Structures are given as C-alpha cells and as structure tokens.
Image (tube, rainbow, N blue to C red; front, top):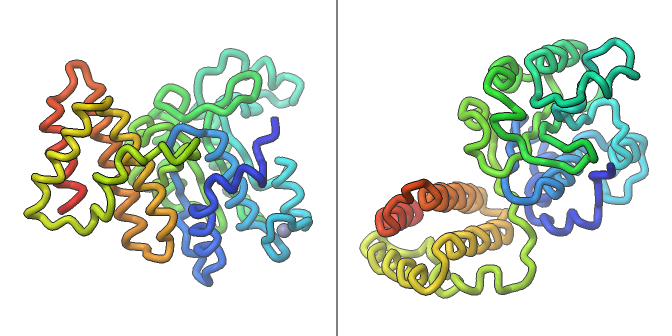
Length: 300
Ligand SMILES: [Zn+2]
C-alpha cells in the first residue's frame, strides 16, 4: 500500500515547516526519537516519510526532487527507511515463509527487536529512519498500543532509542501517548498531529473563550474556568476539549518561529488530552475538578 502522498502533506504544512527548519539547521536540530500522536495515523506516516525524505535527499530537498533517495522513499523501497509493524518481520530464513510466520502475529516481538538492534550495528551511508506502527492484513495503518508494541519489546529497544547509532531516527505513531509505555514516551519528543479541520467550525465553538488565552493573568483564571464550564454545560464537554485542542494546534502551527510558544502549546494540548481521559474514566472524575486542574495548568 502507498503511504506517501505529497499532496496530503499540505494538511500539516506548518508542522512540516518546523521539521524542515530543524533538519536544514547545521546541527540537525531534531530529536532522534519522535512520537506522533493523534487521530490520523496515515497522515502521521506520511509526515514521517517526508521527514525521512528530507533527512536523506541528496539534492535540493524540494517536494518534486527526483534524486534516487527521494524516488526510493516515495516508492517506499528505500533500504534505510522502514515501516516496522508486527507483520513486517522475516523470522523465517526464506521470504516465502514470511506470510506463514506472521499469520496471527499479535505484536512486535522481542526477537524482532533483537533483529532491529543487530541491523543497526552495521553502519549505513544513509540516514536510517525506522517508523513504528501497526497495520492490518490489508495494509491499513493502525496506531501503536501496548498490545502490538508490548512492554518487553519496548524494553529490549530502550537503550537503542536512548543512544541510537549515528544518523538514525525513530518515529512512533500512535493515537494517545498513554498507549506507549512511559519510558519510551520520556525519551521521545512528542508531537500532536491534529486531524485536518473539516471546516472553520472546528474551533469556532471555543474561539471566544480561547482567544489570546496565554495573556490571561493568574487572577483571571477563575473567570476563565467558569466560562469554560458554562460552555460545557451547553455542549458536550469532550467536544469542547477537542475544539480547544484544534484551536491550540492552529495557533501553534501559525507560530512556529517562536519555539517557546510552540512547545507550550504542545504541552497544553497534552494537558487537554489528560482532561479528556479523566472524563472518560468510569466513574468519570468530577467535571469541575478536571476543568479547575486543567485551567491552572494552561494559565500558570
Ligand atoms: Zn532528493
């Protein structure tokens, strides 16, 4: 299945700007461990492949570049750019057995992890990019979770994630950061990849509430919190929180120049996600407590 699509990269163009700048920076200013989270795994994979392309391009990095590296990545045949799922592991010696050996395979195994480690011990002329996710038998991409990327496998790779060989980048694709064990999350730089807004409605619900919210002073938090609660009484609270995330993602991506602001928004999106999860617990946490806690994190 084809996962690279230069056109749909437009959907995350600002985030892409951020990576482009980092990669062109003399010091290759991007983390060697990236974690993408959000609802759209295909878009995440597309972005991951584009980052791999920018890291490997031997020409001018333009989207239409026809150098061999770009060509291979677009065709997903690059020898150093790999999508690793539980179904992509040649456990058997001959490739004709691959189908049998992966049948019903539930997760990325420790053995698979070991083969990745031994593969990485050989030096490469390319910038290796390993994308970890899941897929079904038809090739549809799915997020990583604790079942398909279990703790034992993560642990086997932890040291490699922490101190990878030169010119190696790992990218994890998942729906929620809580679906990956925390020791991996803490070693990665996390990015929320929003689903592309269908229309401007996506955050219009919260636009008044959130406008310039970063200028709110500590003594105004209570007022902010009450306005948020009022909005939640009239609407589905989790929907309001999703709109707030969309709003943050939109302002974040229009301010990629200001790194501090950018990272604060990323952090805040995560706090909103925590609030959403607290409301999904059974029994759910008290709405007022959740929002009070959230507002303090956002403002202070
Ligand atoms: Zn190129």
